[in-house]
Amino acid sequence: MKKIGVVLTSLLLVAGLVTGCGSTAPTTTPAPTSGSGTEQSADVKAIKDRGVLKVGVKVDVPKFGYKDPKTGKIEGFEIDLANVIAKKIGIEKVEPAAVTAKTRGPLLDSGDVDLVIATFTVTEDRKKSYNFSDAYFTDGVRLLVKKSAGFTSLKDLNGKKIGVAQSATSKKAIEEQAAKVGAKVSFLEFATYPEIKAALDSGRVDCFSVDGSILFGYLDDSTVILADSFSPQDYGVASKLGKDGLAKLVNVTIAELKKSGELDKMIQKWGLK
Ligand code: GLU
Figure 1 (cartoon, helix red, strand yellow):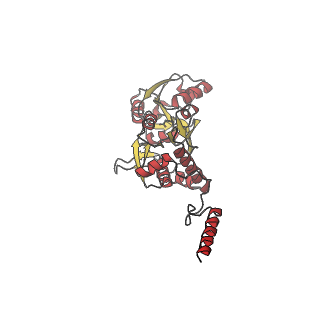
Figure 2 (cartoon, helix red, strand yellow):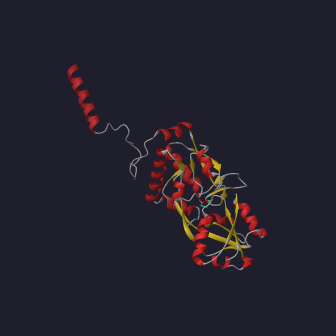
Figure 3 (spheres, helix red, strand yellow):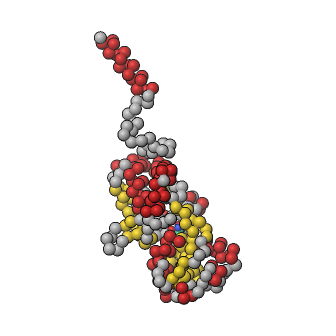
């Protein structure tokens, strides 16, 4: 009897090994749609154990990351994306931290945030300092001017002053485009977008330029966004170099959202398409 028991046990063990034990295969959820890469690495596990995902987001870009002054709540497409990534890690809680173009890199460096999801354009240069996911949105650089100025295109801004954000891609993008259309422009750099809008209103600059999605938040009755749209900006989720498990999990999540059509739904939900 004892012998049969031993044989049976070994048979079961062998069967278990052959089928891969089955203990890690989810029984109720469907198989992941895109490859593996979500098994928890040490860096992801540390976030899971902490129970919150700390994410640098914009609070002044309506529809992407915006703090509603009435409710005090931060919401937008990029906040939704942060929540999906947190769920993928296995936690519910996202702790948002307000960032600007200037502060988002340093906040990643210091470890104050795990991820930056804040209209952060992927560039070759930035890739030397951070891990970037594949793009989840693409936007163009645009120009906001006073209606009363009568400008119709970048060419009309020849000899004019353009307000841009520090540490943003805007200045370089405009310089390249201005050279193409034969316009000579100068720049004034600011730390925040509200400051650039104020400078446009007071006439210190003739144009406020950044990605269209950011500019739309500053459009009002006295201003207009010109038709020019150049230098496509691919937005990626940034994480610290070396935290490769986290970077991989983010990328798998974005790939799955793209494949299932969910990313498009999120973009449409916020009226971004
Ligand atoms: N997306 C551009 C950048 O990464 C514009 C600046 C911003 O995101 O605030 O530089």
